[in-house]
Length: 120
View 1 (cartoon, rainbow, N blue to C red):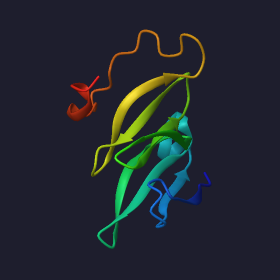
View 2: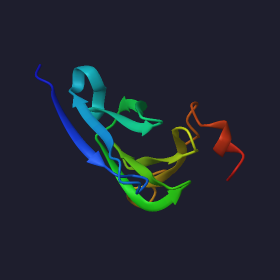
View 3: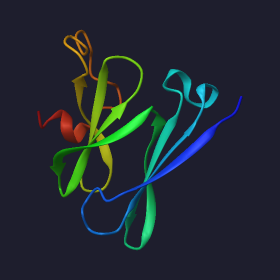
């Protein structure tokens, strides 16, 4: 089964240095999402990996935290997670319904960052 990769350069923190988003894979490597996403963020002169899971797309939002744009992570279904920068990594922040009722009956994912669990 063929796989593809797409690279996007984004300036998520408006510092002039691009972050690198790689969307890659296929249904064998990434399940129902069809692709996976990895985000490389340059800190102290070196790129560090963030995200790293199945997702169809990453959309920077207008909302920000600590200078970085929040990220809407697209995939199958009608309830998309928003990930937020906590100062060192992107972590799960909330879920956004993509249509009315899209996030009904959803519990918090087990990997929910303890940092944001207490900051609702």
